[in-house]
Length: 324
Image (cartoon, rainbow, N blue to C red; front, side, top):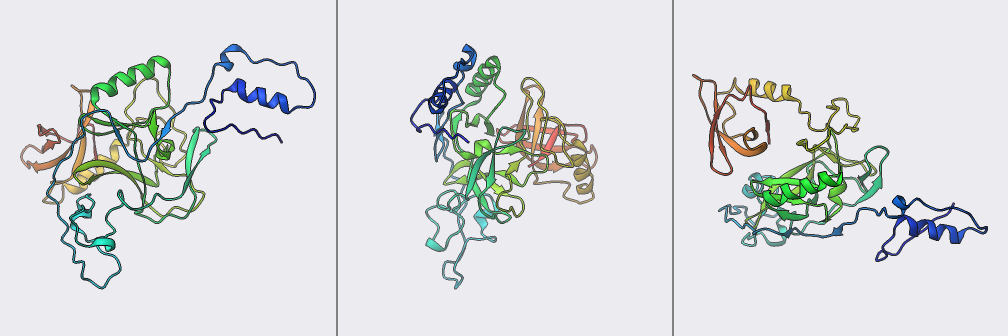
């Protein structure tokens, strides 16, 4: 078996690889590659540890303060009962718990050991290189932070080039993380309709960042997946996740599960009040995040306040929406 290695700083094309292989062979071989294959180059990206902002960086003081007691005898503080963590906010530098604080996953906690592998049907993927417990922080999803206008421009360029791999994660209104050109290993995590991880938005020192957390225990060698909640752009893409509840095509959503969940919650007097949701706005052709602030027993409609402070009164039994 012949193994060929290229230096990390070497631009390694198909022609370069075959040229090295021919030199290793003991006998001459009359063979030439077609021109189109000589020009092919693998997709390159720059590995980064933190987001690179190509738009105005938004830092907001959310007013969340840690109320944990650092004088407790426990070796760790700011765990499951931490007020900040319950609100998806890491403890800030003002936290008085010092080294005992464990609610600083984005700042201090090392990424879990993972490796990028070639999968059978889904290109590259990411597998765990150690056992990972349920609820653990795996890594941050990082890339270039762009606004909606730049995102749209990039999408059209990618579509015209015939690209089929997209690495865009919509975080908030006018904030998209694009890991196409700069990112980390999280960009290779594949989709599954029954994922073992999920993306979570966290507030870190007033800044919104995205982390990947496990939904269950994951064994070493198991592939990491999350639900892309894919919005179709271009040709339909077949889903190869192979799960029992596979939706067959990326972009298809199990609407019935929302209706069942909503029906169950309507038996409660709260009627979903306070739940975080994302709702499809047909006029803008995109999802918007918000929360349910009220429910009318008379009309059967919910009041949604979006992150851009717009308000809608909707019948969620007929809308395209998801719980967050």
